[in-house]
Amino acid sequence: MRNKGITIISLVITIAVISIIAGTVIYGSVQNIQERDLDLFYSDLQTLDDRVNQYEIHYGKLPTKGIFSGSTAFQSVKNPNDNDIYYILDLNALDNLSLSRSISMQGDDVYIVNDASHTIYYPQGLTIKGKVYYRYPHEYSKIEDNI
Image (cartoon, rainbow, N blue to C red; front, side, top):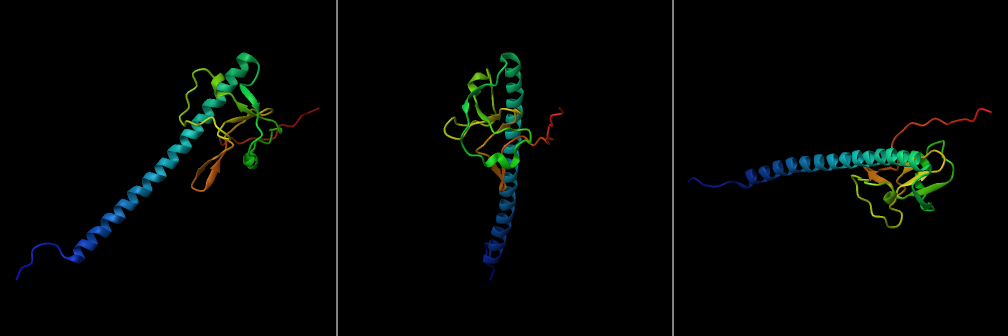
């Protein structure tokens, strides 16, 4: 007697193989999305840095709208040339600014700049793979005053 159709064993094996393939594809997609988000974050910080420098050269001041008094979690990665004064960047003052990541202008979801070093930070932080990113990964050396 010949049975037509598939057996339970072949069905279970097929579902297991499909599950493994789907899991691999999904995991790879999440990794790519996180890498893309970090690249966009760094691109935005680089754009902001360029635009803030241009603004300062043109107007002789930073494009700010008040002193930042929010979370200081970013202090662990601060530029050694920073002082303790951070300003909220006025993104509206930077004409035709286009950032890849849109942020809301509510609460702590802002970009800030240090008064002394002009390093730009995202104090809320971008979390990827359990690590929090606050600024562009420049390597800074301490500037010493030679008097």
